[in-house]
Image (cartoon, rainbow, N blue to C red; front, side, top):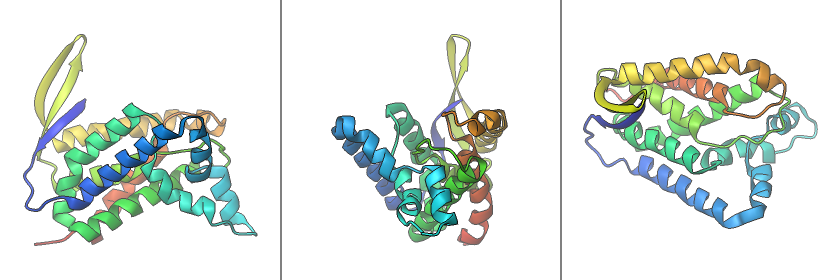
Length: 223
């Protein structure tokens, strides 16, 4: 299923959500300008679990791998990676920001991303594969949306063999099925991750989603 838009009006301009999207797009354009030097950027600013594990377990303590937990949230591995993440953030982030408020939304987003990376590192602490993307933070946003707007209608494309069916589904169905897919793939990938093989950081998605479910309770702004 591919969500296209939600039918859920907001009451304020989602300035933080838009700013995050702009920052991600700007960072990706910078990546494209680097050419062969892109590998060096990922080596310095992507999350590499083995480096973060070593930095924490020191001594000596190294700050650079810790800072990569933030910087990696604004880097992406390709057009589809960026486009898919920004589509989900554009559709669901504005309503979460509307409910939490601008400042709380930014803090919620960053904390979800940090926890997502932490879970990924715990699952595969010796991996030397750079990990980038806003997926973990956005997973937290999806969880918050699911809790606060479970009945909101989401216009969704459903591929049926060679045909595309466009229909409206409750957010509970769209995001619930999304999480089930992440959870299933996360367990299937365990053997591959421990073998040091690359791929989607499913456990970052799972960790970010669970973080969002928990964090949205104290962050939520009741009216």
